[in-house]
Length: 423
Ligand code: DSN
Image 1: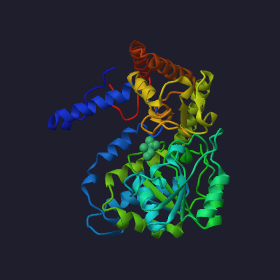
Image 2: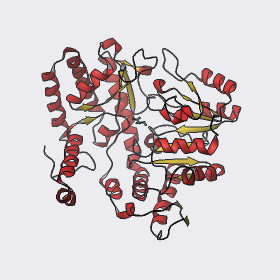
Image 3: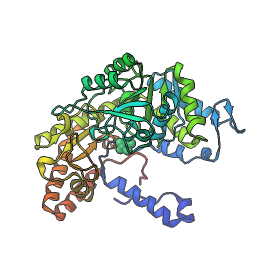
Image 4: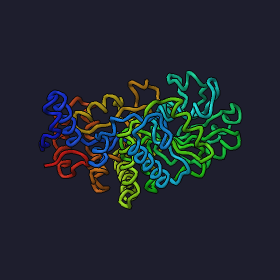
């Protein structure tokens, strides 16, 4: 199905760029997007990101700006802040961080000094670069100590976390990650952080939408600071938020501005406000629970086809497949899936003997397909496509991949994606 031409001004002013945007719209319409950190925003969120709010500079916070002309911007930012507080049940929200990494860096600036020890989950075990991993500024400017998961169960080893915390006395403990298929036990992290007098930062970037929709426990009673991007399961624009108890509000705000950033991206702030309004609607609870139901159904269907899943399944939106037993490296599988119209990313699995740029696994998730309205009844077919693609990858069977690509596009034509042009 060909999408209609959109973006009339862009098509005239810069046809080359307009064609690329159109091609991306077509790609996002025709392919099954399984990257667990991606989604489709609503047309309303998309519109907000393209408004004249982007023309305005607004260093400072509502009512305390360094530039005039903030009559509307102050209200936009206040709306976003109040909605964040209501959706997540927090005392304070800062909606200005440009994205997840700057948001996390602001937490360092607020609660640690260079050289201080921080404790976070190791990147190859499912953590994030900014949780103190060596190649990141957070691992170079701070002393990153890393915890992992237990061999076998692939669940977080809280004995290890507690032992490391007692021994290393970190200033900050990070929980959350980018390849964690199981519920994060915020209470257990909170208890450890309190024992060693560390600030607990819950990075809920991946699961923010699930938390907002009641499909994952909230970190609010346990974490001092909550960091999240706004564009993953939360289904907002590319952006981030830091939320905290009132007692940490000053430190958080000072760290974001003037500590790290200049003017907030007001068009993004507006789109965050829109996304939070959507997240407060009862339909978003249904969405969040459907994301999890789809991921569980997809995991079951893959297990039935003999796939090894890290931790044996999922509690959330994400499934991490270890392809070692299939004899297909993650990168080879991911590229074959891409040719079959199924977009995933290759990923390390815990204790991966292979390198991060050529690892053993692929990471998949259900936020995007759920936004298109696919339900659990379709997950066996998705698992079948993945299985056929991995088999085709092993055999170098390009014809099989082309057939799957056609089947994917045909099915998806019946599930229009939010935000994309329609006839
Ligand atoms: N890039 C994000 C993800 O895919 O999980 C994390 O920063």
